[in-house]
Image (cartoon, rainbow, N blue to C red; front, side, top):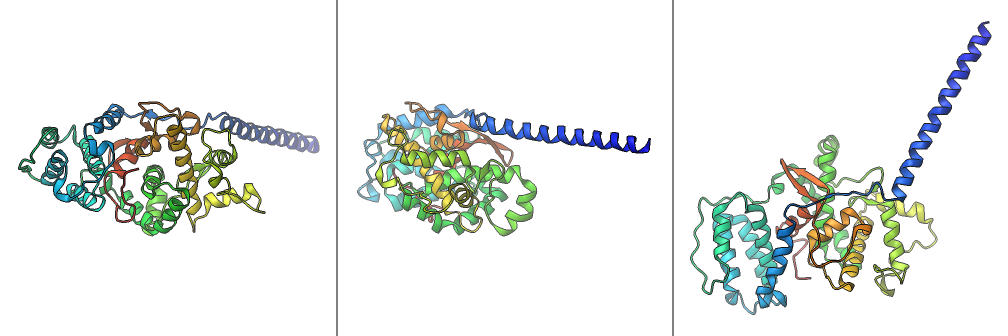
Length: 373
């Protein structure tokens, strides 16, 4: 009797275990199918300031020097409208104004200065009426007027720069500057464009993994590495990395970059699956994380330029597309800006919005300079 009872218990345990394994298998199969069908891709959202991004791009045509991306021949011949705007920002936000002035002195580019000013307008349009009104009054000026600020602030207008996440992230990026610049050199994508994409992913990682950030990342001043389905400091998915590799070889792909790039990611005699995972998850050297990011951006740039809608100078669009994926990249005249929502210091950003703000903030420009694409 006791033997039969034990046998029945064992049978129940075995059946339970069998169903358990079957359930786990079903879950993994479902995840695999979802990934293959791109059901796990980030859908994101359209940024509420999407119209602003496209509007300022069109307005650049008002300045012949900006339209042609020409540098001023001397610092004394700066376009009066741009000079007025720089002086206005300096009078109200000295830290941000100085970044713009320093960048102009380095690049001599009115287009870069104007875009940096527009990044500030985007942030201040709802919370600094004086600055917004004064900048608006600079439009069309012939002579630069005297501008005086009202209670100038010594802090940057970009709130993410005051966050503990940024202090950690900026230090870590400086540590990685050599491999970032190497990836930039090898891909032909400006280092600052690569960084502007990576910081959005890192902010998302830091804010979503608070305990790990406080315990490990903040004290060591290092970047976070993606987990589960996205890997490395840029959160590149295995499937995305394979598409990047495929695009390098496929001459029929709209993302094909030409013969010069066909072999840039070759594996030699190494096992591709093992080596790819190793490339993306290497904690001691992030070169390949940056290189795959750069090649994604370059392939997207190529697709849009070939279609007649270049976005080489649109960090907000490139950041958005990096976040939502190849299959959502549809070249058009007025591209959407958005992506995943990231909350920093109680303010919500979209992926593209944050990429734009960093790029034109002037932060870390001594390591990753701004320039006209």
